[in-house]
Length: 343
Image (cartoon, rainbow, N blue to C red):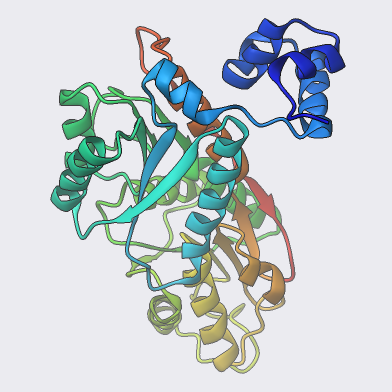
């Protein structure tokens, strides 16, 4: 049996050769039922597009660049790992490959862009860790290079395609749940001001308290990590007079904690236990990111739809590569959901 071809896939799926090509290159123009039938035929026959021929025809490398940021201090860095895995799997379905590289800062990353475009002919980029005054997005926009970001263009107009998760909606879900459980002293443990995603998550907590008619409770800003969460909890508990041995119900200390990450939430639970305060019984704790560590340790958390984010990043970038971008940049904001466990 010879190597499967576009024609043999078309015959097996009872569609035209052009339909098979559309499924591979522009799946959104094919009906879901037909697309599934063609994909099944591709899988069954083991068909693989001729990448070299496509590159000669389109002058594209089929390579997408992504810079890996330095590893953080907390367990929440696993979110980037999940995103990378989903992004790679989705890109491969369309015969794209992800090229990883590192850079110390924005300037170094833009230099890497220039080198990779010149040496490899990278088609476009996916950016993570967006922030205020992001030099990387300005550099790419000025050169009209295709890219999409996982994260909003904080503090700037929506001048480029982006995909993000609504952090404020996530912490609002957590706060609303705690209010329904009867908590009235709900603290926030987050990051220093200026972090776009951190400020967004803080805003959801504040909105939840306001909607419940509660005054804004204490909050502490620390750098991400278990030790940061532990120190934040200690400050909040000490300020409220909670000394341990039997809970916090009769003190002015918080009875619940909404945290900007699972790393911080794990630090909070550790400090509570050290003081004889039982997480989930005497005080509630909810993290953010729903990491595998949270699942193992029974930590309630806000889960991000990372696979959906990665798939949308690929879709938006492919649209830009085909020159089909709309007059306004594509923007997609996903809503997270609350995963309740023992804390």
